[in-house]
Image 1: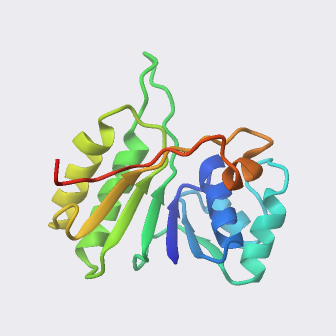
Image 2: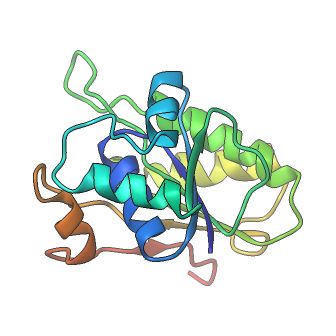
Length: 180
């Protein structure tokens, strides 16, 4: 599968490296040129046991690369950007909104069915009420027909994230169902 992973932070780097290890063609997208350079050099932008070895192997095998721009979409895109807390304790979804808008623009230029997988931490209803309408508006396409959307939250713990990716304590997936 051709995969885009948006955000080369904790979740995005682990997801990218592990998907590349499983044989997928992975492109990490991040606006930070330092993170992009580190990943492209097979170096980890964060400290996580085993991650740098996986990144290096993915780059050496040609299965993993990073860049600042989206480029042509593949089969699936993972939104793994940060959702820091606002001053009142609520989640700041600005990065998620920016990625969804960019993905909507990219979807407009593709004829292939594409799946958007939200792994970032978002509050219930965010995918249905904000992300799907934004993707539809920006792409001019019909969700569930022209593109798919699912929510697959991560449950990665620091220092065991690679192992957690391969053997998660549990898996949750919610998907778009227009029949409801």
